[in-house]
Image (cartoon, rainbow, N blue to C red):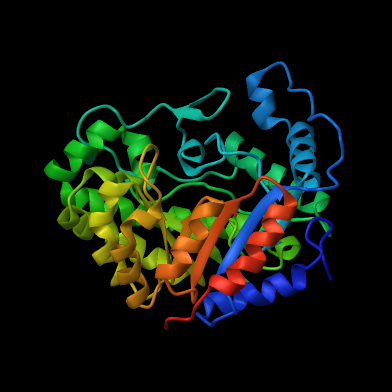
Length: 363
């Protein structure tokens, strides 16, 4: 059965299953979005007066998602994914007690483990308590979204934290950079504990969303029939390959085993030095390559991208429509996931047809 905003939902799920299995689907996986040709000519919901309400008021967030999805064409593997935005309020640092300040575009955590040495803080005292106000709000909003989205769209588990980044939020980035030199063993132990907290949060959110989504998705809009999330350690941007392997990979590895399907978010060119370590983890099925703001697109690192494919990993790239042909000329379409935004539905349809002509199965 199709979804209101994705009539070919059943066929799309089959292509996603094949993509995860590294089967060739006749072209690359291509999630292409564009303004719908028959988009209703209605203005977006009027923003609420308080910036906090714009993030936290469910009726407003639902109206905004509905307005966006009614105006969007979801072509190929693109899926209509309800989300409440990425301000950071619905993430593990707030569930563990970090205050957050919300502004128009995002949110900012205040660290809570700022005093003394890292070893002065017992990580076992940090738990996601059922009565935490942010955690209660996040689950309530997701339950309401799941109920309102039945038959219309899918609901992802969101973006609620990753290895290294949660501890950086709790401790402060500069302090954690000192901690990895001064207390490496305790950082590793701390991270393993936080990953156990992460898996409990995922399970709670997945239990709410899995029925309406018929599986799972998160912020990268890749669908899985099982448990899928985009693992990450953006903190790794600032550390050496040895430090990453010693202190953070031990927590990422069990995360990959916990998930049925795991994409890893390689965020920023300096993080590329960790790709060799990531390729060694058999349960990472896909690497998402994001060069970072102000950098050329991912196709400027073709040798690295081909090396990732040669290692048997799927690859996720965000490209402009005019870069898709170049990517397909140099990369195997098998296991390749490209996200692109077009200016019109007609352009998106043309790109999907062209991708079938340009795609090659290079093993």
